[in-house]
Length: 631
Image 1 (cartoon, rainbow, N blue to C red):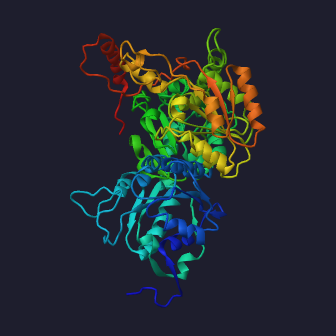
Image 2: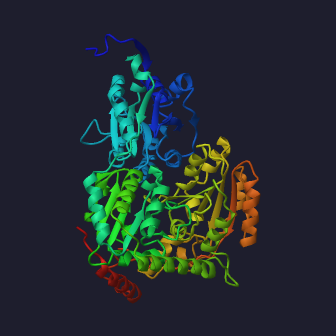
Image 3: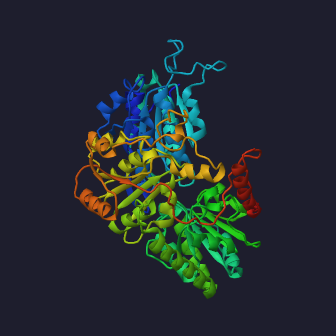
């Protein structure tokens, strides 16, 4: 039965139809319209080389193709692009069946955890099954319709498998609905059977007409605004936690005005860094386990915590131990209902900008005034932390290498308006959460929702592909760099100017510090040659890698910088280059900024005969008394 018998038809393969459809999809936000899928990343293999690649050649004039070196990386690149576009546009990714598809799993998880829209198009088994069991599929023992692409179901907001060419008529519009939804967005996976990619169907021409998906701002329920004002009236020590939702809502001015007018200190999550851009005295920097000591102190006393655009993971809440006031209450402003109800909060399911505007107006009408003592305390704590940064962190003791914290201080001073600094995983996000200065039009882009090593370089390429004219810098450790270094070749191919600042500390020093704090011994976290006498890996000497030559071999301009002046000089020289650059900075391995004082739940060995481990575990467990159940 043909449901479109009266419509004009165009006979196309499934792949050709999909490409034409994607090029006709637009988003609209606050009246601004743009193409939603602005490019496609792909590595071609079984299925998509004869299907999608053919369609892109014939029909993809408005869908630029980008070539990565690893399938995981291309999802990170699409994610970086979409985040920099504040979720108003994204890119698609196409792969073969088998490892080409499953390599995307980590990227899909990162996008979905961070609530970023990406469209994934892995190839799948033959729908016809004439071929018998095919190469690169799992050959499941109890289900003939199970495939390796079923693994995407867990990490995708929407998943479908296409086994007939006409099925995309229903599947693609639903995919677009999810991708453009502020509350539901994440990775969308549409698995395309290998044979069906090349099979034809008479598609209705209307399917390829321009379609505009309006991304709407959700207004709060007026009752929730009134209830929030009542909580603010009785609060003596309110505190705001600002998440990534502030950026996606573009609510920077509204947040600053609300915080300053009513005297509410603000702490930022990793995704929320830069939510306040004007150097407000109410900004305490990062919050939670990896945040600033000043934010940690304020959170302990807060009697009302207003969470805006954050999913409240355990690093932010200190595993539900950061808020110690026995009478503490929570308000959560979020477009996602699941996030809005966390911590037993009063849920305000709404767009952050709209909600903040209405709260400001209602608070003014209610005559709310700042608690001057609370404001003064927040200001004092903030100034104390700023002094600590200048006197203890942004200096290098005699006889030591420059520390990662000091390196961030140098980067702060050298960055200009319009520049972006990007980081993910390890100690770098932690230090940036404490130390990065967002004043002067700078942007910091931290991926810590999935804490995904290997995200940095491809995501930076994605950010640069948005057309930004500012410098795009990547700060990463050598352990992280070794995950996906060859994406620098992609940067060369794409002529995307990114500058990698490589912090060389000879290992995974973030998790190494964690290991020493909980186990008391080192194993497998530093890059060392196996010791011949003992046979132990951790007893040998450090592996020496010439990262400057490594970068140069990939066509990247590189410098070695060993102190503050050399780092400054290299950053200024890199700014003048047209292509990708790398600045290699050997840093002090074990020097870190002061901690936040916020506990975090990590379970050590419950039973051990090692006295050192036992003492560390007991010390750690002492913090568990702060942990609470908020309802």
